[in-house]
Image: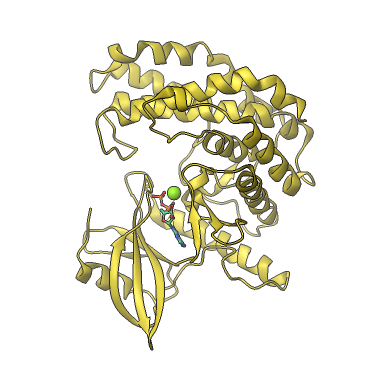
Length: 364
Ligand SMILES: Nc1ncnc2c1ncn2[C@@H]1O[C@H](COP(=O)(O)OP(=O)(O)O)[C@@H](O)[C@H]1O
Ligand SMILES: [Mg+2]
């Protein structure tokens, strides 16, 4: 959906913004929301904001998403200030309406929110160096650390069972039964790949149910392009895309960065020979994450760091496969078979992780 300049202007002026609207352009390569970068002029100084439409097909209760987001970002801000640090670019900051609201609805019922734009920083689809991997994993670990003492009630589960792998498997089995798009026959190999690993899908959920792994506040979508890296210093700055911040397991976040951060290929790469786990990147992720989390991880969390990478990669592959079978309804696709290609890269990566599991475990 592409909005006109007049429409963007009308929406953004529901928030308290400074200066005059100059222009808005589609921004970033997000898979879920519609994102625009807006430029304002204030007395000759350019100010930039992000304006984003929440995808309500994915998030059925945008108000809950925004309540979580506001509580989390306000808490992060208070931590930064308590440490006498400048806010600079260490957390995303929501704009508010004059009534103090964090989102506004357009005439079609779409929910919009706006952030201060973080300049001179970038989110990478593919990580380039182990140094980047180290910094990014630190940023994820620090995010979890800073949210341990979030006051108030439990956050909303904006997507219930988001990383419940056995439930994701059940959903896949249902998609196979329904065969909505008539595609099941073309993916028998991928289905077999999942069924061969069925038992492992419930490992973390079981540890949680036994009490060896606690519930924490987690980001739940820690792919590398949801973390901003400073252009100059290369340091990790902050987590963005906080729609799925909610109660979860720390290992989900570590697992997802292993999935996206160790693979040198694009998520939808069609040449599978390019896909694999780069061990030097894994080693750096491990070091960066443990650097921030060693004070709070339980033994069971720590011991399962290598397994988490495999599980989340398998889980996301399962989701791509199910969406392919459903006819591409959840993940945005720009070409035919894109979800199937995404699924295949995940499964190739799972194999690569399996081959290197001994080395990964030896880091513990
Ligand atoms: N506050 C921000 N400052 C700078 N860039 C941002 C900001 N928020 C989002 N972006 C950019 O927009 C892209 C999409 O935003 P994101 O919240 O990740 O949406 P999606 O859910 O669609 O992935 C990001 O990858 C990033 O490049
Ligand atoms: Mg994103």
